[in-house]
Length: 331
Image (tube, rainbow, N blue to C red):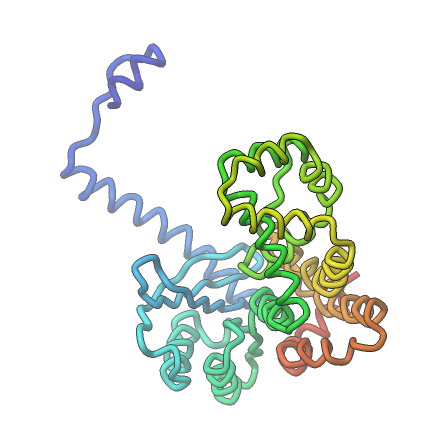
């Protein structure tokens, strides 16, 4: 393979290292280089402090893993992972995992620890701050906002609208003839948009669907649609007629706009904190305040119901001294 690549570039043949060299001296040299690189992070932790991040996820093979990363001024490095199968509901187990990680990094170097926003992690975080009183704990902002959006999406009104919107996109995307027709009328733009999380994807796709409503109305009133409709079997015709009537139903689009007005202020924060090229801690307090004010303005009678959902995942967890100080010091 190396010879073929060299030939394309007009280079002389390349002598590949042997398997013994790869697993022996070459691997040892790379390990030494990496250890030297990581040592530079340790010096930064000692000087400026660091944040330990604990991220739980499920692998494609259904293994429940907990990743530990350390973030500082110098950047973020992966430290280790642990198979936590069957133990993520045990706060004491999670506390021991995180406590061991703090000892590994050096307790005097750790300023902040971030975890998922679920009950067992919150309890383990409280145990940590009781043991290490100089360390702040907070849940992941992105995970917290995703849970807020999830709970709002599961409320009766938004759930119905999202379900009907998803039926439109599923009907279009699941047919190999209807999908190209949609692309023609939207000038090659897609309706489905993907966000950083599942429920953010619901919000993004709903906004995209709403922005393409005129294109969809043109499509479902076109000769191409009527020809396609005539070719469908009886069962699909029933579904197609429901979708067609829904696209022309102004009351449906009014409800879509209402759900967007509810989710968009929170979706903006989720996108902001998900962008890895900026530090977001100094902004999220103000952004959430503005999001709540936008929801209050959009829903002057119902906003308190939505604020309760936000408070459940935000107040006393994200709104604490570390975030408030970061917001206050943000120029």
